[in-house]
Image 1 (cartoon, rainbow, N blue to C red):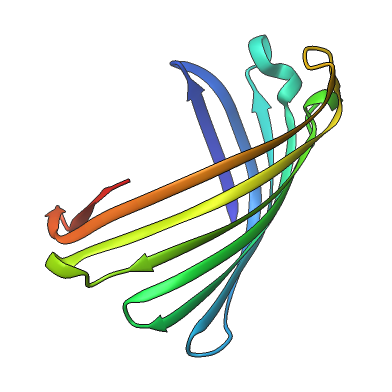
Image 2 (tube, rainbow, N blue to C red; image 1 turned 90 degrees about the horizontal axis):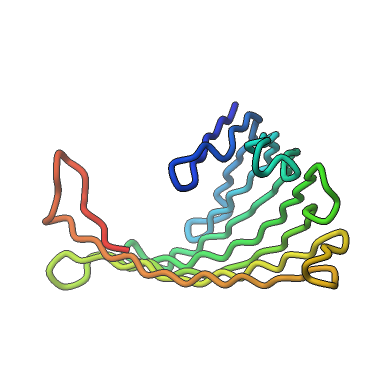
Amino acid sequence: MGTASRRWFGGVPLTYGAGGRVEGRMTLSPHFLLDGSVGAQHLHYNAARYGSYTGPVISTNSTLTYAPDFESSVRANVGYARDLTAVSAFRNSQNAGGLGYYRENLPLKFAVYGGVQAAFIKYDALLGAFGAIRSDVAMDYWVTLSNTQFTIGGFTLTLS
């Protein structure tokens, strides 16, 4: 499928991009589901401010879902992305992995989803401001709460 993106930062256009993605899904058993995707997008950054970030981004992701029953599931995901910016100091490879747990039909019709993901980012070249080649770790934690009794126009409200 084709992909397109547009981002603003502080009311100023930051990026636009175009590319493509292939997705697949396979039911491994009544309790296990495997999802995967491979994608590429060429991002064009605002040349006046961030032109050195312009370049293609290639990514692949996979998620394994285990559903022990009809009301809960556990998800494990892994991913890899390669950001090929115009300037080598901003080029990087990212490896990520995470776990999440979903449960519905809780008391009062609540559902909850929580999880954690870690991304390990390794840059290609020295950036003078850091005095070393960057190597970052980014952690994301989330909890999402919803309730089918609270809807607007057929959409369930979600608190994250």
